Amino acid sequence: MKSLTIFLFLMLVPSFCLSQIKTGTFSDLEVPQKENSKPVIIHIYTSWCQVCKIEFFELNKDKDLVKLINENFHFINFEAEKMKEPIRFQGEEFNYVSNGNSGIHELVLALSKNKSQPVYPLWIILDVNGNLAEYHEGLFTPEKMKKKLDEILDF
Image (cartoon, rainbow, N blue to C red; front, top):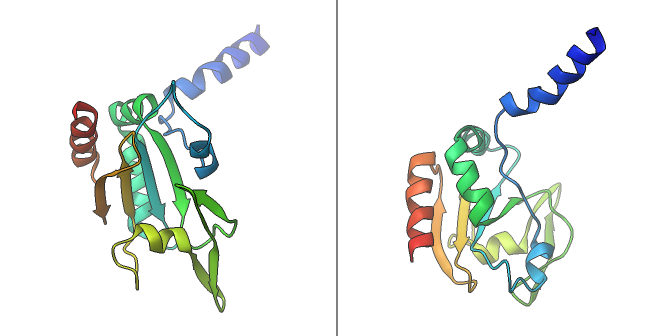
């Protein structure tokens, strides 16, 4: 009986935990998605950015937002300074650019409007055709993000 109780407890624990935004990769976008074409959210962050960490935690706490993203968008969480593998995106290849002990991925520079020093967190939202639907530097609150994503879906 005790083992059954423990088993049931372990099965139910995940349902009480925070929701999680399902993340994908850029290579997922290279596969033709005719039947499952969705807008794309690219979240660019760094490991040292405290605002990035707090923001992503707050976004994951909002169950309605997590559900909206998971059901209607492809979501890519992209660490700007640690991703060193080449990335193919929209027919081009982008590489990591080393700068001594650190560096940055060329794709971050290509997506950022501020080429000399990108602002983190950076949110790029593309429509189903790969066109820029939203560019947002800095903190994106769950309320503002829900409003923007609803606008993109209604368009």
